[in-house]
Length: 207
Image (tube, rainbow, N blue to C red; front, side):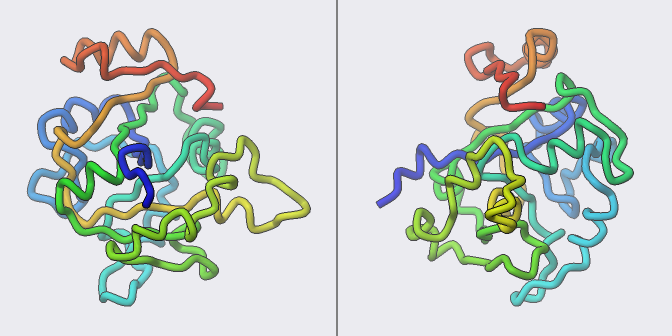
């Protein structure tokens, strides 16, 4: 059986959103606690696509809060470098909010997960009941890979972007910690009231 305490989940956000997260948790776009001053760092075109991408349960992908199973994702590369019409965001302004599958199970919030990028037609969706088989479903070698361009494996990028999709707000008590780029970002997080022992500097998790 997988050790879900060590199955970490990563939600990237702008550091400006952390203050709201500390009070209200990681909130759903339709939540009554949604951040009306939310600073987006994503691809607006992709966000719009997710908002209308249908699922078998009648909802859309945009109805869920997405987390990744790993770091240094293709989306982070786009966010930092500013490709695809996305305005570049400095690494020190991006924070990973870290939780685990076990924390989500403890919260009893419903979720689904995918074995690749959620909007890709080659990706399959899995239910909460199938989480026990996660090690057989996900390709962790792709998820943890530093690079995703591989002429011998053109599907690697899709598998690296496997997603964990949370149906409701995640209260801040289920956030295990925060990962940031440098000391300046760490100082900013501490100034917001986060305990130093919950902050880890990991420049190698960025580009």
